[in-house]
Amino acid sequence: MTGYIALLAWPVLALTMFRKYSDTIAIALTVIAGYLLLPETIGIDPPLIPEYNKTSAAALAALAVAISAGQGQGVRPGWLPAHPLLKIAFIAVFVGIFMTVITNGDTLRYGANRYQAMRPYDAFSNLLAVAIALIPFLLGRRFLAHPDQHLTLLKILCLAALGYSLLALYEVRMSPQINRMVYGFFPHSWAQHYRAGGWRPLVFLEHGLFLGIFLCCAVLGAAAWMRQATGQLKTQLIGMIGWLFMTLFLSKTLGAFLICIVLLPVVLLLSVRLQMLASLIIVLTILTYPVLRGGGVIPTERLTNIAEQINPTRASSLEFRLVREEQFLERVNSRPVFGWGSYGRNRVVDEATGRQTTIDGTWIILITANGWVGYLGRFGLLVLPVVLLFRRSTSWQLTQATSGLCIMLAANMVDLIPNSGLTPVTWLIAGALAGRLELGKITDEADDTDESEDTGRRRYQRADTGPRNARPVYTRQKTPHARTRPQTRTTTRKKP
Image (cartoon, rainbow, N blue to C red):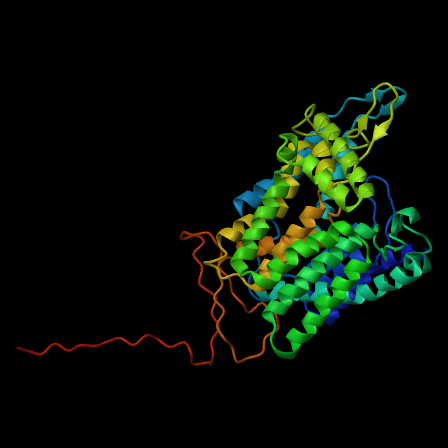
């Protein structure tokens, strides 16, 4: 009962935050706190529309805040992507879902098992569910586009992780039971959260793996924040990095811990341009992973041998997973464009016995269910902001906060290979980067007056050129008389 009350009360809490904070902070808090605090695995499932659960509660509550905010002061990006490539990816997501339903109207039978055909109702339901899932992306693009708002997003993520770490450390010591204490149930298998003689925490998330990658991103975000800080704040942020890193280590999530070890030096030591380059390489590798995997480019045997030296049990699990990936990639080849659809139709099934084979990993789930169109559409919305911002990383003078968000998104995308950790926070970060892309070049001069980070007084210019999109570079006056007319030389002609 407590969980349902929390789901229904979340929009009210979001509007309360909007009254107390600016629209930028309220939207970020609504999405991030909703992801961290609302219960998993339960929801209200009315007929004809998607289930009202943790994801939809946070997204719809944030949308309510955005509608209450209205246009605000200044000019913001529109509600829908304007960049041509982002627009193509956005359209591909919805076209792919619709065509998946159209092309999967047949019933599948494997032994005694029967998998139902997809119906027109499924097109409406799935389209609405994806639209709700993409709300954080659209809100991040519209309300978190400015470099100052990127820093605000970093701060909120890091401070939320700092508070969450206390709950995580409690579960490391006392076992993962906070969700049961608050909501009355445990959201996953208890056996999967006992690791190496201790407990792997999950707090209010679906699995400890989700907590691990969230803490990993928070460590990277705190490092990016520290690079921009000075004085005593910088010292405090160094302590925050150490604390969050310790919590991540004690959380016993090996994959997220290794990702953090690899990328933390990138944030701490490299310039913004090189951080953007590292993010570019990672996200492009993830985007092309199905091709690389199918073409035998990924050294699977070498990876298995390395894992064998570290932990034989993990090596056996990795080898088993790699075999499953090959089976699913063979299934993709049967319907590569729009996939096999839902209702378990995308799973590998033994035709004789009807035994199902399942696998985690967002990429393999998307590509088998929605084909290459659905996969490239959704992953394109994640990858394109990083790729296109890299091209502008020098001329636009991107900040450490922006490059830090790119590294965080890249880390999350690495985790999408073995796990299904595509969360509202992931979409919020990707949306903020997409908004920065469409914001264009910004010139920010020193100002003696105090302005909040999203008062809307900042003006931006679109990246497009031409008379229709001509845009003035954003500047701020130092004094009311800073802008003066240029002096012109006057000459008098002497009479002969």
